[in-house]
Image (cartoon, rainbow, N blue to C red):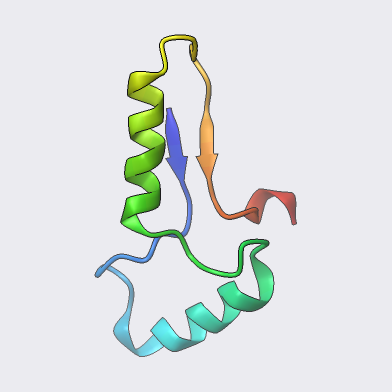
Length: 66
């Protein structure tokens, strides 16, 4: 299972976008929100690695570590 957290998509509220990006830069360990490409790479890994079985892959830029 791929479990994304904060991902930069058009669903975001446009007027809060700058505020949310500033929060991500200051708070997340990687300094940015995830991009759809980050999720695509994670999903591709899960589908193509035959030795990976049953994990929960959290894609959150380090949010859970805070």
